[in-house]
Length: 199
Image 1: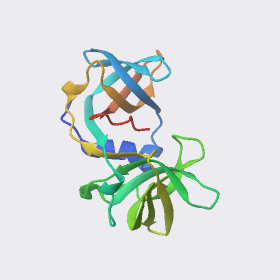
Image 2: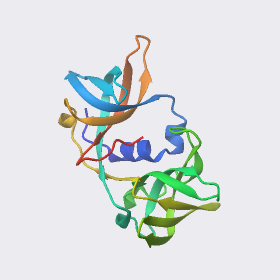
Image 3: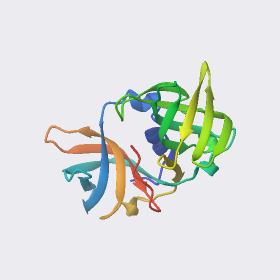
Image 4: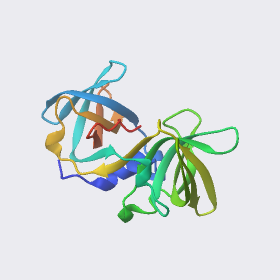
């Protein structure tokens, strides 16, 4: 496997149009064993899956972040559920590095969760509250108002190496199902420093 390609992680997390058009199954869970280029993965529901890593696979990590890490002008990806008042309640936020500004920019359905949306946009305004923060996200052709609560998962990228793919590691990926029922993937995201697995 190559050294980490962080852009692959950003695309995976932020639900860009490129990923949305790529067929596959999202897998999340703990690595139970590694045999060459094959991972044995146990999901949260206890099911087991065999995942073969492509020769050109890339590995990246995510680490926990805080609402205070999101500033006015930040470019972020927000997976959220629409609220009755027309605003969005953030489920997951990914803070992009400046080098990835503009990735998948816009607002669209987020197939990862029922009735959810993904917005990749610039923070045009930010109001901090005791119980979280309210953001106005701006993108070409529109804007969205988003509420972040203490329950919102906030993540940012961190380096990872292929040798970190070992038993006990918490990982997430988009994989293609094979004829024998196993899976294959080109990208793996490792949750580090106690980060919650990304959707």
